[in-house]
Every structure is written in structure tokens, then in C-alpha cells.
Length: 294
Image (cartoon, rainbow, N blue to C red; front, top):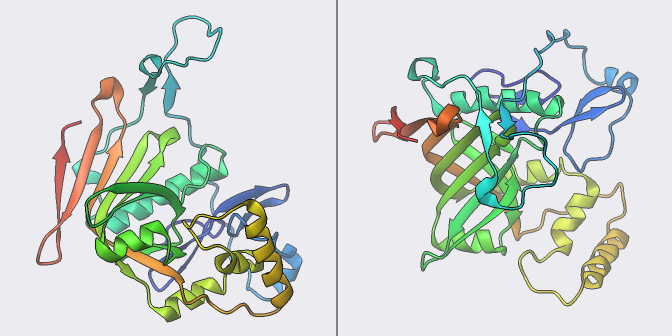
């Protein structure tokens, strides 16, 4: 699978895409996680990494969602039934799709990352993860995609959290990437499996020190008495593991990889006649593409 984006957005190693947020700064664009401290100067980095050839300038994207309005708007519209947007995007055709859904996702993610650099999208790697318990009761939350490859989509969490407990009894999950300013969605259904401890530890080492402590301080999804309880736990960990020391990987923390079974690419079109093309996994490892009515 080819490179997803220019060096300003992603690191790609062995066909694996490690998702790094594109952050605009006064001196350009850097690649780092949203909560990661600012990197050292370019001069300092130059001694560690060889210079890469400058990437060609990306064309600017135009917003493709327009708000419907008749005359001047005097006040915000509060009735959902009156909220409308017009989509003026180009269509999505079967002949333009990649053979593998993860290659097609790479194309769209590249464009979403480019849109983020231009200020159109905030956190293009944010995705809604939906799970259900053993009785079929659903729950959803937003998490950050941290890696994707031909085997699926990876995110990290506390294994005692609600989503992890639900995945333990019902591994079926759905993902949704809501790239509204581009009038696009990617909808994934698949099966979740835990990442290996080596893979988890490798990712954990890339997290900022504060985020590493946070993984220990928070008993995710559990009821706590107050914010003070959480802050005290974090402060105690800060004393035990000051900046510059190695924080052990929590045994109750790790990743999930969602192996896709279907991947739908949704492109908004005029008159609500949207394009919906869905890849469906076949038993022999190939993918069938089908068009869905909007």
C-alpha cells in the first residue's frame, strides 16, 4: 500500500500508517500527536534525520458543503428540521475505487489530513466507535485512530473501560469517520481483537509523558467522587515517575484492531442523492463492491 500523505502528516513504515495529527504553527506544519509537547527546532532535528526532498504544494481544497439560506439570517436556527446544507461535491464512481478498501481509505484519509492543514477539519483521525454488550445494548464514543494498515484500524484504551468490556463479550464493532466539511463519511463494521503487548508497548513509548501517567491515573468509565480524586492520583504518579523517567506500560491498557468486514465510502451529493459504495469481504480474501441507495 502506498504512502498516504506528505511527510508533514504521516510516518509510514512497512505498509503501516501511524496516524499523527497535522498541527499548524507559525513556522509551518509539524507532525505530532495533538497533546504532544512542541518538538525541538528544525535545526535540532536536522542532525538526527536526513533532509527529505520538499513535497509539491497541495492544491487548496474548497468547502463542498453550503448552508441553505433564503435571505439574511437574523438569528441562529434552533429547529433541527430547518437546518439544511447543500452538497456540491463531485461524485464517487466504482471505476475510481482502489481494489482494496484500506487503499481507498488511505486516499481519503490523505485528503482529510490535507483539509485539516487548511483548517477545514479538526482531528481527521477522530472516529466514533460503537459497541454493544452481551444483551445488544449499544454505546458510542469518539476515540482517535492511531494506526491503520491492511489488517485494520487501531485505537488504544483502558481494558477496564466500557467499550473494552463490551468488546470482550461481543467483539463486533462499528467505526464512523465524520468528515462533514468534505461531505464524506467512512463507515466500517468488523471484529475487534487486542493488539499484542509488544505493539502496545511500542506505541505507549511514543505518548507524551503526561499521557502515559494519565493511562495509570484514570480508571476509565468508573464512577469517581470528584475531579480532585483524579488530580490527586495524577500528582502522586508525577512524583513517582517524574519527567525523564520511564513509565511502565499499564497491564490494563492496550490497543484494539478492528479487522474490517465492510467498509462504506459515503459521498454527499445534490438533492440528497448521495453516493454510497461499500466493500464487502469475501471468504476467499477478495472484496466485492456494491452500490447502496441513499
